[in-house]
Image 1 (cartoon, rainbow, N blue to C red):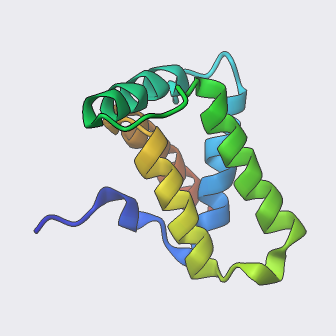
Image 2 (image 1 turned 60 degrees about the vertical axis):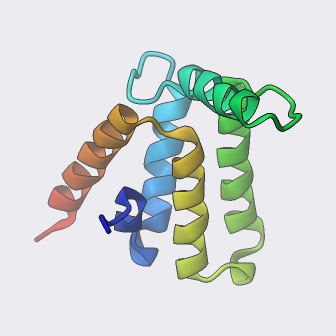
Amino acid sequence: MPRERFSSITPDEALVWLGALISASMDERDKTLNLGRSAELLNARMRDSGISFTPKRGRDGLSQLLALAGDFVNYPDDHTAARRAELVAAWCRDWLQPDDWDRINARIRKRRQRVKP
């Protein structure tokens, strides 16, 4: 069974991932993430499943991401580092398309290289 791509979000890097995701989703000039397209795909999956749902928009993905950040800041003792990584990975699973994942992953690799001595 292939390894899930989101498992590369390690507990010690969960906040780095969160920062990169927020940065990419907030900057209108940045084309790293396409949350609007992700919302369309998410809506199509829900429609195909036959489940009744409220249609999602790109800003819903951003709202969920900011809510995660708010929880991590306001309630730091409520989430272990491993749980933070799980929550960020769950958001990525719902909202990132494969090409968005590749671009964000490249940003994280660059950040890792800058940090290495």
